Image 1 (cartoon, helix red, strand yellow):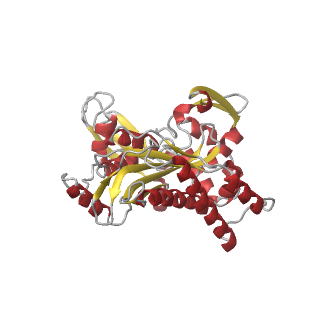
Image 2: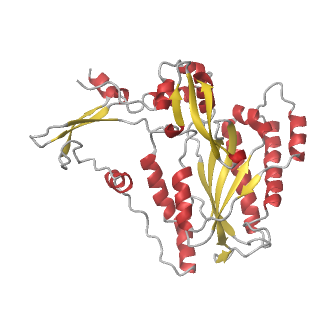
Image 3: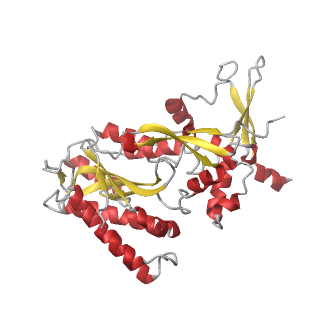
Length: 389
């Protein structure tokens, strides 16, 4: 008889037995996401059943299906690798810079109540700021390539929306020529304080327009006029890190951060008898020292739910010469300018090969006799079973 459930991830354990509607607060999308994570890799999603065809072994193996939700800490490894392979072919042998745009915490309630519009505005304000500086002859005089990734969490699962941007150290000018970033006095690609002022102005001006049009709605007890005045006076944070050592470090960064979820299972330590959960986090105020935090189950799920993105929202976006439309044509044009071989399209790598090369897992190898003799004998899909039933 097949087991009904495999060993559970800690996040799944926390969701078991919970009334998810209590945590979703009427948001059907959040409730569906939490439910998918809860039943990930269980019989409720079906399974593949394989058997070793060596008569002396005959080992049976059940592979439960994953939920494939982008918020699940157990899923997304293959999709992440496919995305990284595609981006790797677009990287050029130039310097790349890492810039982080954050939002002041005073905006948290407005963002939480209007996530899709405010996240989109964050992308727009940050990308327009970078492109304005890149196209200014004083700084570069060309259009850079930008990859922007949205993160909404801090180490303690607090709500902290910010945008990580990878910016090329050069770009295409009006004649289609490649312009290399010149050395400057501010150590980074563009002056950080000047970027912060432009970013603040663009973001708050757009917020005013959205409020006027009724596209976003603040809570009833919020004095938006006073808040906006305070935000105009506040110094906004744009953080520019040291440039990446080269394209290979960009790839390493993409591998770790682009498809990251709010919290990974390896950070979750223990579910206690009092129904609380403890997890590790880095305290960056103390040079990244690792500490532990303990929260009630309800509070932990509440914090996690804050970071579930709106349905079909794109959390990784490209701008400049990396913008989606005609991207491959522009990159080949740059490669010709740099007298480098052109790209001839990406060859799709089968999942079986990705599993073998990235995770050293051969799906045809029997875990018992170690021979490559596993063959698929059944695919169980619960929804088809009920339809046939």
